Length: 343
Image 1: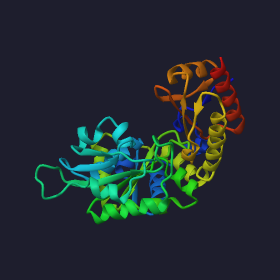
Image 2 (image 1 turned 180 degrees about the horizontal axis):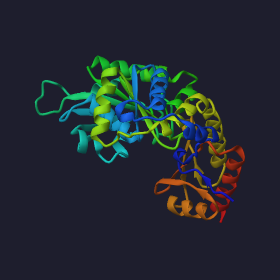
Image 3 (image 1 turned 90 degrees about the vertical axis):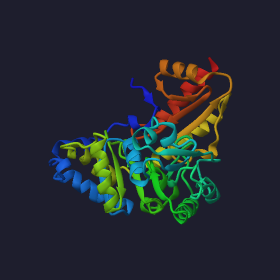
């Protein structure tokens, strides 16, 4: 019996349609700009984000790093949420590679207010402090439970940042989850940023890849950074083909992941010794806390019973729903959790 894998939506396998498209994709050399399948994906991706241009990158982390490099220079500062992916999970790439310092701003739910944006900007007339060049927002926000920023709040924060002379990069790894949760087009979210990165390899279930979008000028510079970072690939159309299928067929079905996550969260909340904040279960991420068992022990016991998961703190867990996880898998997972907690 196959394990139920809640570790991440990155474990989702490509659909049969994706696999076929990958086999049959017309190919060229993307570094030379002549891979027709990749070129088509870039056209579609830029259109979906409402941007002028796009480029394929191997990972969301590289996409964010390029976003920082394009929007800020060495010796400058980037504002980011204190629990953001760029600050927490990207191995200080901004500092190590770009020479950009990150200024972390603690927020209530990953949502930065206009007042916080203003307060985080350094005074330009003080030579002791770095110049604040850019800001990054994360939507949906991973460590805050997969919440989707209310669109009016995101617009207000973005408008304030621009009024302060900042460039805005959006870590939209799960931007389509946010769009589905909010009932808006992804381009409305992306319009709040100068550049945006989104993942193909999470909820959209592609095997590899992310997309960086922005103006023609930003994407030209992004391609130079991609080459510098070793991210230029050749017949990448074999991967881009899956992306085209994903954008056509895998976005609307994210609502199923959200529904499964909600059912999962509600079931977990009914188990003794579990605390789950349902207000933050808006998309496909479910965070919950254990009262009497350590998270590593809980993870080990679940694994023995065929449920794979990810612990993120001494007593804190994360489950992620995705393509390949059905309603019955959710019920089976809840039974395993109940057995582990009652053992």
